[in-house]
Image 1 (cartoon, rainbow, N blue to C red):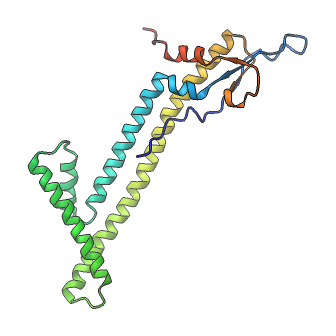
Image 2: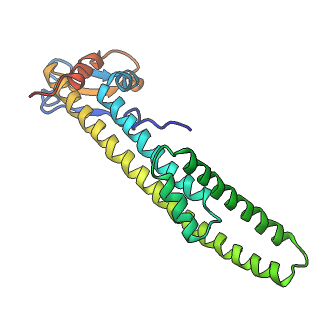
Length: 213
């Protein structure tokens, strides 16, 4: 599964620090600082923890959707049994066997549905089975489409929530270091062609400092 890191590397970073540019042309030329965002992302401990939290959240939502997909041709009662049993965690041998039976039953019904769909001459009994299985299939596909949308919204919301925690913390740390070093502007390293002061390590030190008790 492709991993998605939190949005620190994509944040726009250009802070003009209060009062630093008001000195005018007669004053000393403003001092520029820059931050290596790739190094910051690799060294910011809390970001690594938040990124792991995001990966686990996304994996859980993907697993829930996958279980629904496995039960797509089960009846409502069979589906409840399958989902409830799947949610119990590590299954016993007996429960694992039952889950396997239900999943195979769903697969068999799907194959049967597709075979009946391709049939040119269905018997009355086959026509009745085709309508029954087709009804379940359409219902489940509608449910899955809605669940996919819910999953996408939830994952996006979690990503934005955790990314904001990261970027807000970085903004505070960068501003603090910039003011301490009397910098006029702090930029991202990749947009600096020449000069400037690298404050990445100082920012990391603030970000990784133990929280005051």
